[in-house]
Amino acid sequence: MHHLFRTLFLALGFFVLLPAQESTANAHALKITIAAAADLKFAMDEIVTRFKKANPGNAVDVVYGSSGKFQTQIQQGAPFDLYFSADIGFPRELAKSGFAASEVKPYALGRIVLWSASLDASKMTLTSLTDPKIIRIAIANPKHAPYGKRAEEALRASGLWEQLEPKLVYGENIAHTAQFVQTGNAQIGIIALSLAINSELASKGGYGLIPDQLHSPLEQGFIITKHAAGNALAKQFADFMGSKTARAVMMKYGFVLPGEVASR
Image 1 (tube, helix red, strand yellow):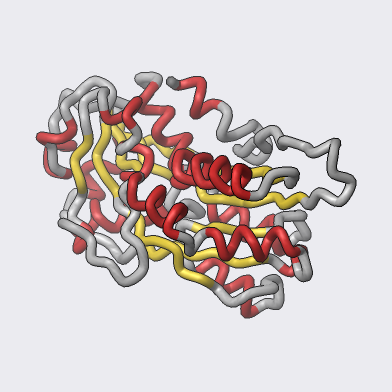
Image 2 (cartoon, one colour):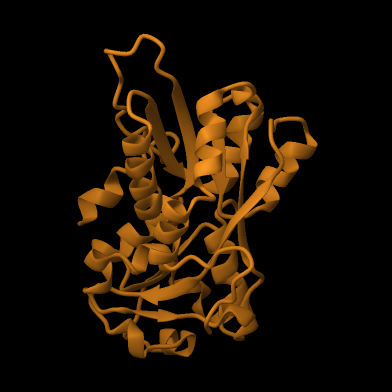
């Protein structure tokens, strides 16, 4: 399983471009490249598969990584057509600066959980992390990863940050963080519910939901970028995200959709 997470980042940018399914038969085939927060790995892969089945002959590439780093890359001219951020604030800033060809669209609320490959995290709370037997705790880097920022907020709200900070190891994005735990480089981590709910991870010790009142909302949003202005396939994919099919996939991976209420 840890090989799956290795594919989500490289040494330079900590992300990898997934192979495109190029259409050689259709000379007029369109192509889009999506920059997506790493918490979307499982959900977006499934949504793209379903989109391709409904729209054969076109190519959809997905790059997974840190929302904050993607924002910087788009500002520097990276050729992404859609940008799905784990923090809606990043695409809002891009829109204000003229880097968007659409309005900012909220698509989900994310949740954070405790997850371990060796411990039963379903029976643990943040206070459990003070156990001296737990030496290393993985979180995403709060400087540019929204899930890491919320993990820090939850630990501070619980009065545990100063005590636990020496134990922390930082992933470049939330999938990298999960890999730390998967490979044993950390005994437990604070990761995205959307990753932990995947059967391959959930079967390894389970997960414990962190109360959302301990951190600011993980409101997630996306834009069609300025680079994709006039790209019909980008608009088609954006519309597909609001379809029953895409919404069902998002709910399957634990995301709370706009207008719904999260269970605590």
